[in-house]
Structures are given as structure tokens and as C-alpha cells.
Length: 246
Image 1 (cartoon, rainbow, N blue to C red):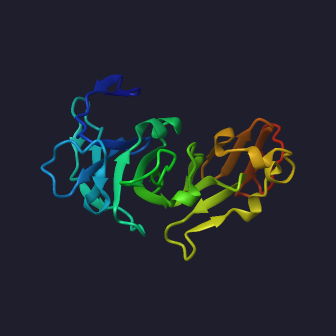
Image 2 (image 1 turned 120 degrees about the horizontal axis):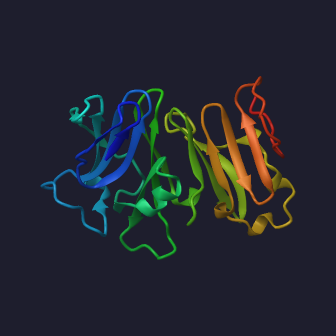
């Protein structure tokens, strides 16, 4: 159900099965939904253990909310999953992880059939860029993930996340179209990497990462750090440890 504040009417939206992500566009009066499907199935529910990666696909659907009583659904389109090194994987949605990001990111998990309980596997993050009204997919391989993810879509096809290597957390950037799709955010050298006496004991679950195309925010138990992309931007409140993303 969608509530229109300006018209003071509610609309019922018929959303297809196997929903893995949705987002309302604030100015285009549209709802974008993403669904995980098996490309050789008859449209039934996916296997709870996961869909074989080489048979999985995503369907993106657009629902227009401009009518006062009805919701018009545009023609949907199918998107192939990004290529991965190991195609002998099972993929499934993890709504409980998506909810941890207030549904700003849809999370899919790709795991081997013989995985260990502690093996999170590869992560596929689904993000919706509002400026272009496009869906972007980011694949984080197992060595870039942790049981408690900390990530944030920042701008068009850019995903910032915390990677823990040998107990040391660092901020990394995923940019699938770049020559080097994963690289550390070197200009975001943070206080917890330099000064924390217990840095080797910390995990990504101890941090909250937020941001947009103006600023990136990192919150932990020592305070908040901010990095602004615009040199003229100044935070309106006291922020500790912040440095500029020049």
C-alpha cells in the first residue's frame, strides 16, 4: 500500500512474487521493484536453498503511481546477474540483511553448495540511483565480506563498504565499470585505523556507514567522521575526525 500525502489517497500495489528489493522515487511518482527468478522455471517460488547461479536472473519492474485510484505497471525488463569466478553457486535473497540498511540496499547471497556455516559467500548488493532512476549491481567476493556487513550506496554505480583484513577495518569502494573494480578509499584514512588500541579486534559491525553524492559519514563508538566531496561544503554540526575528499 502507498499513501499519497498531496492527494491524501492510498493505493494498493500488486507486487509480483520473489521480491528482493524495492524503492520509491520521490519525484517521479514511481515504485521500482526487483525480483529474483530462475530463468527456466514456470514462475513458481524459488527453492529455499537457493537458485543455481547460472540459472538465476533479476526482473526489474516499474509501477507508476500517478493515477488517483490505480497503479499502472510498465513493461518489466530482465537483467542478468554479474559474472563471478565460480558459477557453481546457489543464490538467494537475504531480506534480514537488507532490512538492516533500511532497505536502501537489496542483498543477495551466493554460496557454494558445500559451504561452511561461517562462510558468508559472495554478496550481490542491489542499489537504486535516484538521479538516473537505474538499478546497479555490486558483487563483493568472499574476501571482501564479513558476517555483519557495513556498506552504503553513495552515487551512481558507487558502493562504499568496510572491509576487514586480519582484523583491521578499512573503507573500500566498489565501482564495477572501473578498470580496478575494488580499491581502498585512500583519502579516507580514518582515526580508528590509526589510533585505536584495539583496532585488530574490531569488526565492521561496530560501524555505521552512510552517505550520498554530497558526503560520506562514518559513525562508531568514538564519534562521527565526515568526508565531503564539495570543497565548499561545511558540516552544520561538530564532527570529529572528518577530513576532506578532495
